[in-house]
Length: 540
Image (cartoon, rainbow, N blue to C red; front, side, top):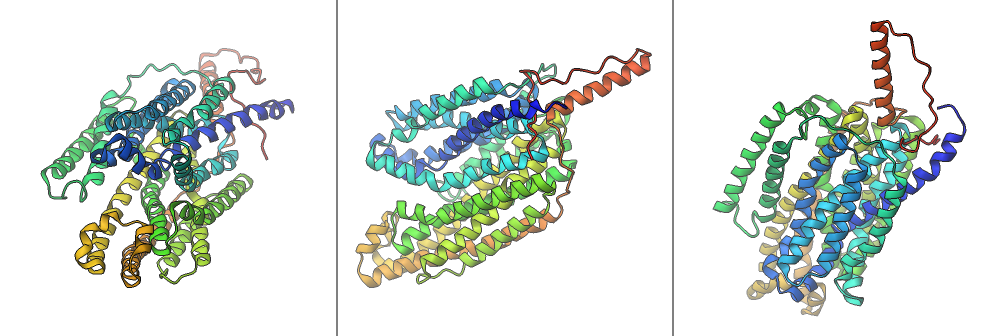
């Protein structure tokens, strides 16, 4: 591609595509966090306290189950139509969730919304891979990764404001105008080649993976909370999950187009990035899940103020993610970033573990800013590395597989830490409240502030003593991530998109066949960009 007009023509398309991908990624990630602050109101109005946990579990479960399906089908049949379908499902689920008249309806519509949200996350990462070479991709994927940090803070703030000032139903309806805009932009600007699939789709593998993922999510969601770990329900789920996982591996070894090819586990980059995703996902969400609780219960701030106090984390994440993306684009080197990022996060966790009830909020802000800086250094670099290490026909499969294991790490890590925290807190509140310990589940920051001085101090200390050790336990988790990152191979970043790489491979294969057959060489192919072929903008 030698004409100078190419980059000029391609930049508007890339700009619009990137804008739509950022928007839908923000919508999907926001809906993992925005519901939390609105949930008490939703449960009260829909009279569904017994189904409260499913409001979150349904969305998480749908995202986890659908991830590998979107990735594999995108590689087989093309991504644009799947992307538009995902946006449509997400919008439909959002609209219906806002019209829910019962908790069961609400949970079902949240599941539908999650099926769409899963596609938004996976397609956003893989479409960028289709239209931007790996060498230039880091500075596009860095802000996409930063969206997760922004949504972790903005979601609870926005959810609380809409619930208090407007109506909880607008927590879902706010997605509609933004989603319709993203749908229109994507339909008009994304032009990817259609793919003809001649291989059998791995329905058995998809079904077994869905069963195994569902079992794991339910075990971690119910174990130690809704059901005892030794109960028949939890033990049965564990057994069923193991059986489904083993059957899945056996099916994948025989499938012609497996949803997760077992040969990926012979790819060192895939193995290292997958382990990193598991470890870091658990550690990251463990911190994000309990920092707001610590700030509210120990410092007596409300939900909005605790969200604002986490803004330094977003700032740190944005700065380092953008800087790391630019550095990778300039140098082509990325291995040092996961090493530095996980170590920085471990340092931040150690600093957070030193918090006491007298620590100033300025220091708290500094520590969470360091945590955000560490996360920003490597979150999307992991995805970039795994995309660069597989063939052009398997970019979607590898991306979704990596995201799947990270999501499972988030689920397991959050559940385990939650169980430990609840157990420690119950014991300590029993000592702090004495005979009133049975009312501990209804404690709020305002209620704690209204308690007699000595009782309030004991409650605050109980929360601090229960939460701070969690940060200590996350230090070795991130240090383990640092050790794992040392084994990440630094594969040279490709200068072409997967589509261009496939075209080149086809041309070379055709040329070799013609040489063997004695056919004269054909004229050089016209490389002028076509409307249906994505072009790599000559980004510097």
